[in-house]
Length: 346
Image (cartoon, rainbow, N blue to C red; front, side, top):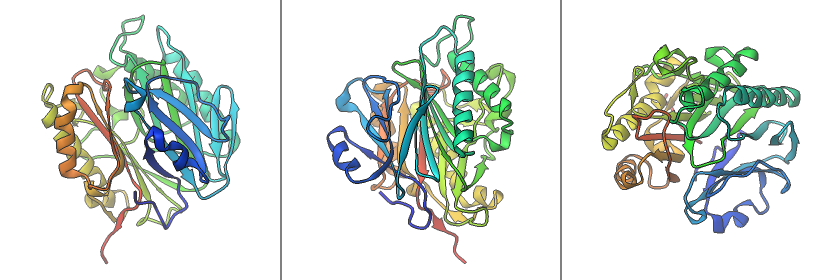
């Protein structure tokens, strides 16, 4: 996998369960996120963050996302949030236990996380991942659980004075168990730019039909060493699906939904959109790596895989997960990272 050589940014790669010991041996590991067959609370007993997410039917079908750094790593726990950091980058994680409703628990867990980030001096939140069991089912009050979660998240962000344009890229996706799990990547001094897609309404501006509080996340985050560096940063692409404007398109047609999601990402990371945000990079889907593809129906994975293989680099790491998506009429969602983007030609 291509890793950023210009910036001191955290690197991520996928590892199969049998290869995990080798992949983490001798490395400065920020964290290991296991996409596996059961859920655990995050812990740091191994000297770095380790977190098991219930995202596969069997352990053999799972994989680990390994985050490494060039710096020495320290770890700890505070208020149920486990973390590892290297003086510039922070990876932390928490879990909200299964409940009949989630807004209050989400607000509390996010508040604890944001307080920890502030206390440790990592105020630049680049990326969040959220894994929501029973995501499309209703809570005890009849509100869809994803919308219930979004309400608590929005309240926590607003309590910490996050403006709409300063929220991080994020994924909100289904899981197979364990309540709500989340992990967060933040930095101390690097510059962050939130990127929006002109073909989509910004999620934080969705109308009320999508819930009492809109989802609070950016379509992507550009991270660079300084605000002056607009050519060599790392791009975190949020969970992206078949949405134009704010509406789902092609409900029931997984292939068309996959193609539209890919088109959304291509536009988001392309030179036109980045130039609108003052970033001078030329990217295509072939530059995307450590890609996760979430597919609602397992029988649709071969078709989605075929489409993805036509668009992604053959060297890209791609993982396919059979889980529910944030809207009941969505069948597929994709995310990824551009670790080393091409510079604009002079």
